Length: 504
Image 1 (cartoon, rainbow, N blue to C red):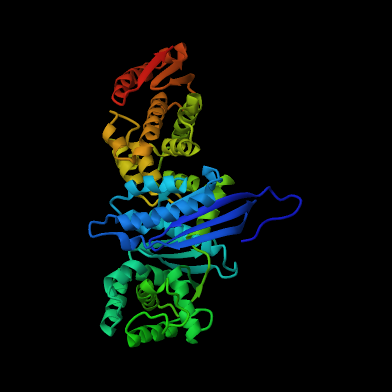
Image 2 (tube, helix red, strand yellow; image 1 turned 90 degrees about the vertical axis):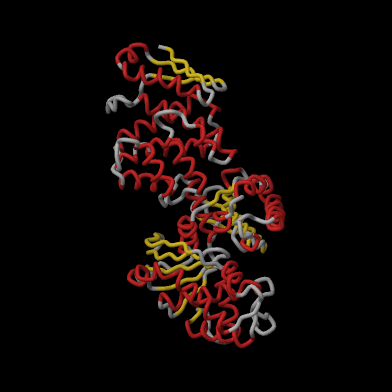
């Protein structure tokens, strides 16, 4: 990635990405100039978060301390950057950890920036974005593989667009713990580890083989470590070959353990999880019929930087995701747009009541998607909509933002259920409640579904939990159903402690 230059280049600004991986934490700082990025700083620390998960899937105190100490060091470097110019994400281990919410509260304080937990499909999309930027355009179809500490992402795409995405629960840390916990590598252990990984890959083999690819690319510390050992041993040149992997497996069994002294090119830091990563990669080669795999230096953090840059340049993939979901589920786009626009206008009227741009975006998307459940049935459609949005693969959305979006859709009509808000992380509950109130009002103001009523003549003034809705008297008299709905809403909003006053 290079920086733009010349008399017409845009001023540069720093952006950063933080990847809280299952094995290592990474931080990348770059200068953005237009659509280009120039890396100015990198930090990486081995935290072994996945190794700190106990049998109850809770992070141990030791793992938490290692992670928080690392994030405090990252935070010192990122302290001067505005909130919107840093994107930090947690991956497989934080997806699995039962006490992830407790950890995140302390982690965000240490880092000084919000941290999102992303789903496996979103992780895969970002990885592909980072790797694809580094590949020659004349090779259109790519298989990209990333073996992390707790999961493996496999993506097939054409040019910059992923077309097939999977995240599998196979990782270097987890696989090593499962098959090589005592540090030894016997013939039976190696065979069992490869076979176990093949079983995990089996559901996707047919689709991936049928899709095909022109070049296979690996992008992770585990794959880079395998490449370095194989190249140093003279088993292959730049790309990892199937033959080189077979020789690596035989060597590990022959030596009986992962020993950097007997595997030139292997770092002492990578050695404790090397066998698990190598077994997963061997299974991928065997299952998918890969002959050779190039290795890229780019990965999730570069994809995060590019995605963040797109948001700053108003090319947010989430807009396209929501539009695609509306089209797929037959949402009345014109009505949804009217609701979303009115919600945005009420949000502007409310001023600092909704101060975060991220919350304003969520309100807009919730307005567009609030009727997505109608594709299933009208009765209880808000519940159907919640289920769809909570469980769909929505590209660009973090796990927490998707949960808030689903909650807003569930709460846009009917009684206001406090327990739905209380199921969200504590830090998100006040904002989600306010967004739900605004969405509910916007939906009611368009109850008549009149295509001419693009801007209902109302304004909103908010003081604390007191909402004063000023309505044009003639308009309200002409819309008795809307008046009745708003009067009913006054009673509904009493439950979360809000007082709605109608004037007009």
